[in-house]
Length: 137
Image (tube, rainbow, N blue to C red):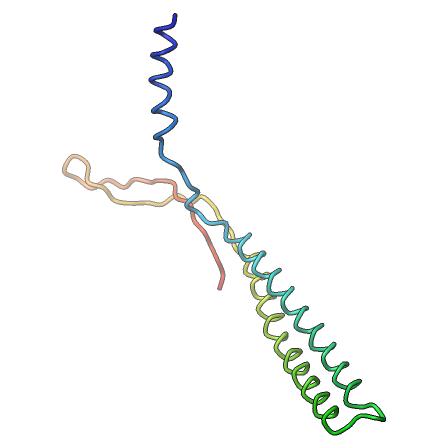
């Protein structure tokens, strides 16, 4: 009994330790586009919110009754950076929408492909299954 257990372990150990790892070679395009869209939308909202906050802060700093010329210049710079940040959020909102539409249009399916093969010195038409990925750009 000890010998059979030892032989079994000697056979099982190499099978489990030196096997090939299998990876999924087909990327999940739909999930990637959705994650990218969410990240872009989050960045766009952060830029928009930060820009509005900077514009408000710039007006509060520069438009006080006791504000000096340096305070007014600082407020104008803050408001200018806020405007640029707000404008910078627009392309991210657009790109987020495009990536979301691409994710909704990406489809995978199994399709039968035809090919010609040589069999016994003649050409034979054969079919084989293929995985297809369709992305409308």
